[in-house]
Image 1: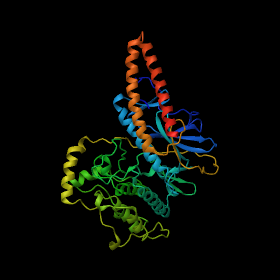
Image 2: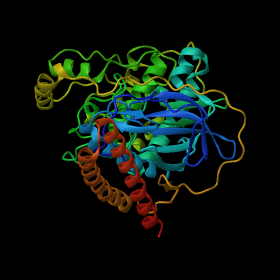
Image 3: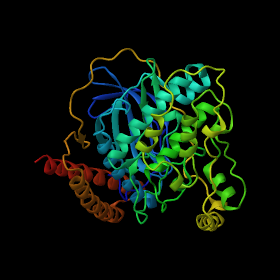
Image 4: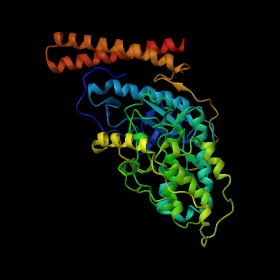
Length: 447
């Protein structure tokens, strides 16, 4: 792992080059797909000549690529960067356990280039946001109702593992030619944060219009209802043609006594069952307590909706069937929120910009799925069975390496005849020491 070694100013492009290989040639990079706040995604081929997607842990705000390795931009970012990698490995290992038809399948998790990677299924399809732009007629009313149910079922599987996705949006839902839905991009996934004392990573993923207000704060309570808000915002966009207002603006309006700028789907005549539309409006409540608290609550409502195709000349439901408008917050809650908004909202900036939409190139048919069990390996290809024990060992190794690097730098400065020669001597000795340490560590884990 990179430690207190000299941080070079010159660096290459942040993307991995086409033709480059990972994990001793097991994966060959074909091209870069997208950037995200947490990582970069590539189209690659595995050793069996099958297309796969490789996700690289690359928190761009705090790191860069130098001589092929990913390193913190500044020495002060080192601890934060190593923490991001640890979280990436832990969450990737949990993601590898998911077995659901609507969740992207993970093949392998490994560490290389001073960072970590996930190799997963390549989905030959388009994200829903692209479909809405290019071929909106494909998203029929009946299909959207089906897709909402499939999204909720996939999310229920995620929540069963005690995790939140935290980044659900139209560009993270892929649809193949047969209209099979796949939920992707778990780079922002975190453990369920029901304990209000639990502090999440300072690297957050927020998308204006899709993220609930609690995702903008590290010390707020993040619940399953938080993911459900994002699901509601996603399908609101697919139905209305535009995303709902930013939740921060809605929160500020409600706390100051102004009307909620949100326009419920049930406020207009639409060719959908009113209970279906009302369920989306409910999921988009600003108050966490007024949303669905779990996936099963929402699915129970959807089971009562009409399943038959609806005609374009659909007549709006009678008044008694109409869903209530989004309620104002309780006075006590509004007072507390008003104070919070006054203190923080004026200077609030999202940590990350909304990510570009994922575009997938069409690939030839692949062979049968890899039936090898998912596994976590280190940069030498050695399997890691106990990730927590391995991470503890890495922490100890990292401390020893920092001390050795510091001592080698001090010694080199005294012995080197010039600054340039001293720098070369230092880096050579340091890298040699790091490789030897990593090999000894790998042998310990393997034995």
